[in-house]
Image 1 (spheres, rainbow, N blue to C red):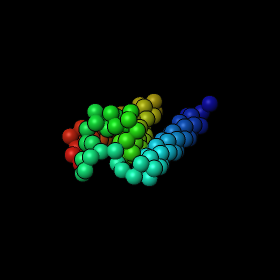
Image 2: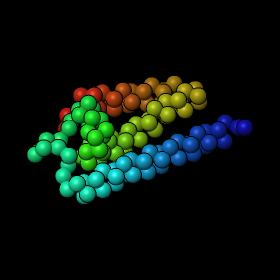
Image 3: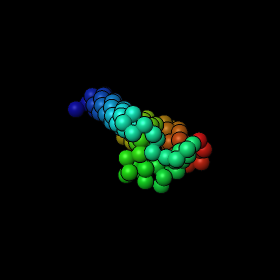
Image 4: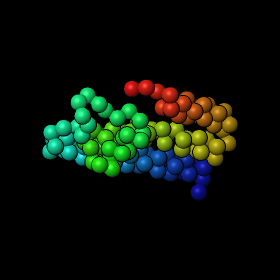
Length: 119
């Protein structure tokens, strides 16, 4: 198998994973919206909405509509981050050190921004 064919196969696999990620996140969001319409409430008192992972996943276990929607949005956000991580691997296999470094910096920036970001 030649190198271009292998790269195209990797790109095709990545695009499939991106589509799967979007579809899964959309299904989770739709499930949350259905729960919201059925229950008529977010699952949280007043204007409280979970902003940390512990509260979000705790709410997910209890099928609180807002927590389910939030997890769907998190999956949607993480889908392209996965693409960046896979790009590092692809560039490393190609031996392109400059792009490995640049893409790694982008991934670190994304991770740090998620870690210190505030809603």
